[in-house]
Image 1 (cartoon, each protein chain N blue to C red):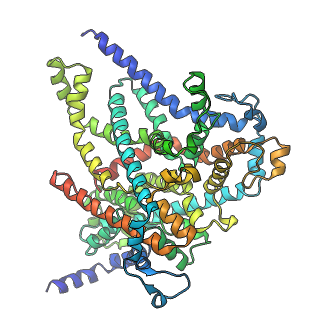
Image 2: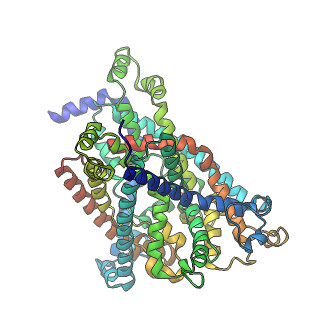
Image 3: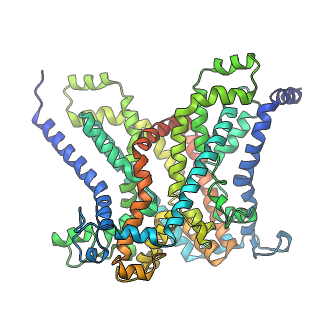
Amino acid sequence: MMKQITWSRIKKQKELVFISIPFVLYILLFAYVPLWGWSMAFQDYKLGKSFSEQTFSGLKHFKLLFLDDRFLRVLRNTLAMSTLNLILGFTTAIILALLLNEIKNVFFKRTVQTISYLPHFLSWVIAAGIVSMVLSTDGIINIMLLRLNIVEEPILWLSKGKYFWGIFGLSTVWKELGWNTIIYLGAMTAINPSLYEAAEVDGAGRFKKMWHVTLPGIRPTIVILLILSIGRILEAGFEVQYLLGRGMTMDYAETIDLFVLNYGIKIGNYSLATAAGIFKSVISLTLIFMANSISKKLGQDGLL
Amino acid sequence: MKKRKTGDIIFDVVNVVIMILLMIATLYPFINTIAISLNPGLDTVRGGIYLLPRQVTLENYKAVFASGTIFPAFLVSVARTTLSVLFGLSLTTLLAYVLSRKDFVLRKPITMLYVFTMYFNAGMIPVFFLMRGLGLTNSFWVYVVPGMVNAFNLIVIRTYILGLPDSLVESAKIDGASEMRIYFSIIIPLVKPVLATIGLFIAVGSWNMWFDTFLYNSSNQDLSTLQYELMKLLSSSLRTSSSGAMASGGVNADAVQTNMVTPMSIRAAITIVAATPILMVYPFLQKHFVKGLVIGSVKE
């Protein structure tokens, strides 16, 4: 019975169905067909052989991955950089949003916003070029440190592994800080003004109002964004690391994505690279489903 | 009227100072790059270029555009951006309309199929093999086709269409209009504001992309993009650390010597060339992006 009804509805809406078929094929081809490539991780994949000619190797490549010191280092780097990003990104954006919210001069506020959003629109190639210029031996950072007598000679920021995570975190803040405030500022406009008036009657000053009215007002937004970004904890990216990393900093700069790129595309060890990719995709998906159910439990809309 | 407390005034002053510092930290690197791009290259090496060039010259820009690689790459970037916007907008809007029809039988499964891709992908290597299998490596179309219909843009447009009154489509259907007719004569004129937003989203994304060139088309110089050329220049100068007389990607050694440009000054000039289109549309960008972000985050 049910089927018949559906079938007749499909017939009735054949125009819409007809339009949507190419879109279904399109997304299946570009997003779902590649899943077939996961089979490479379970084979000793050799280029030029057909699927049936490949030797099946079971979980060998996954085992190799976890015995590989380099992969464990990569995992550490990925987690370190995304955690750093999370902490720096959230705190700086919330603080800036709170401060912007306190500016009553509309023109000044808009100017600050316009300027701080700007780097978001430029590519990482441009941003990385700017970062490397600022950090070069004759760049502004070294000049300032020398003038203030903090250092004796210029620091080679981009050549030392120990600085890389910090440079990554601060570059990301520089590029995305302003942009990240938008959602918080939006949430702040929804706070009922009478709450501020009530707080004022109770004798609350600026800081007290920020702490007891504004911050609780945006708490749901903060919580949901935090949950979402925990679902993306393995997404430290590769662009910044690829563009700013060098041979001597790779022990700290290499992330999972970069590892996949280096093993797969450069060396041609497709099986191991795919195994690393699968590891990342599966963990990420699990985390996202967890984040989704947590946010639903907290009474927020889910993602899926 | 209440008198402002001293604490309040101190707060405001400190706040304004922080904001000004933030603006300087954001803008200084740009202004410095512009200054370097306009200063004679060999002179820049002496140091001391901060906000203004010592002497203004267009030699760096001339060298950039005279080199055999930058201008063609610029054209490829323009072409990919234009086509991505055209195809992306027309196809995404059509699907968004279909999925906005609440009575459409396949609405739920197709929406899920797309939304799922926002959180999950097969990974770099399988996608690389797919592109190769489809003949999209070493091809211009890899810049346009794979990202044509993107889930985020789809949801934003669909949400916008859902906000239009249902009666519009229904009364047109009673009048016997076909779906395509409803789409073209009723929906398209009404969704123009959101199309501006999404068009800019796609344009910025496509213009700024370098990774697809790197991955799929790095062996074919004819298909190189501006961002990729900049990236090559950046990495060559990063890897050979000194900013001496090294000839850098695409800009031939003659130009470096006779025109007194250096890799650093060339890099500054290309950075500005690559950033200029974005800066030119920035006023629109800011307005529309914020709107898009708000729609997208309200209802996913």
